[in-house]
Amino acid sequence: MFFWDPTMILLIPALLLAFYAQYKVRSTYNKYSKIQNARGLTGYDAARHLLQINGIYDVEVEEVEGVLSDHYDPRDKTVRLSTENYRGASLAGVAVAAHEVGHVIQHATGYVPLKIRHSILPVTNLGSMAAFPLFFIGFLFGAPILMDLGIVFFAGVVLFHLVTLPVEFNASNRAMKQLVNHGLLARQEASAAKKVLNAAALTYVAT
Image (cartoon, rainbow, N blue to C red; front, side, top):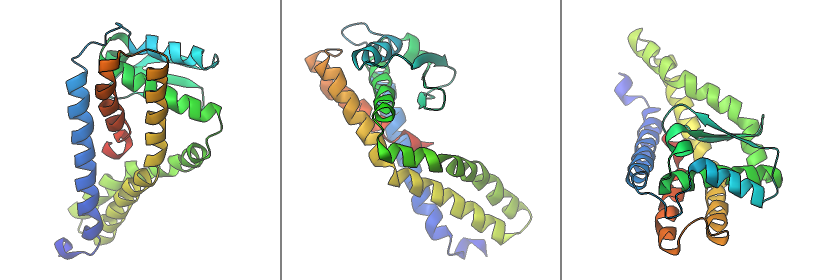
């Protein structure tokens, strides 16, 4: 019976970790997306301001559909912010925008761990897309080997994001310094922004 398959040992902790990360990201974001930042900056304003301060003029800031779909694409040098963060002036929106600019700064300075992650990411994305279809096809047709492959792929994706977590926390640390040093946040907002940035670092594990 598949319930006793040894690969389930990989699946359970991977699922628990992914669910925890998802809860942490969404609960923190939902809380601080309802709080306006003192300066009334939108995510677009914050991203554009930080890029200019750091002398980065070849990166675009665009609006993208979805919730928590914010990301930096180094291939076309574009920061994409979800509509709520792009247009809204929430504390969460400014923090998320700064996190993505943190990735831009990593890219601009040749941060090696980011290069390594981007070189492996296409394979990881393929594994992420294949994991659940393989598992359910194997379940429906009684093919344990397909289920095992699905579990291994899913666990591998979670492991990859765990290993590359330092890249995310580095981006969040850069973002926090930028927000504080350049006065984009009021002093009393720093603690809340830190919580959002810590949650933002878990985004890849949660997806």
